[in-house]
Length: 161
Image (cartoon, rainbow, N blue to C red; front, side):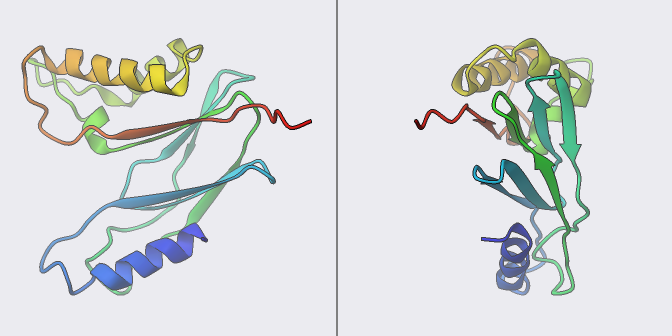
């Protein structure tokens, strides 16, 4: 379904039903036929596309407010072209806001460095590595203060003959 529609529909369902709470949310649609990703976000972190051919990272940051707070909430969508070898990363703020013992956050720069330096890994290997890196940053045995969630999707070459 259309990401914009999904976010609007989710907001309509949640508004007035979660008391004085709100949520961030994101929805990405990968269209393999068109080789595009469309992303809608409501207060959530940007979607990252690592371009395997050039080694650069594209941030999709369409505007959008928190959901569940007001029926007037709208969110825009952003689109990026995809190529075989690209990697899509969605993540929660707990990844970049994980603090070490000196109260320094893991941050976007560390996330971007990890994406680039581990580009040769499979999506599953990278997910495990990123989990380990965030936990090491936080400190062995230290509980994370927020959820650390991410989704990693590799765009593989079409193998149909």
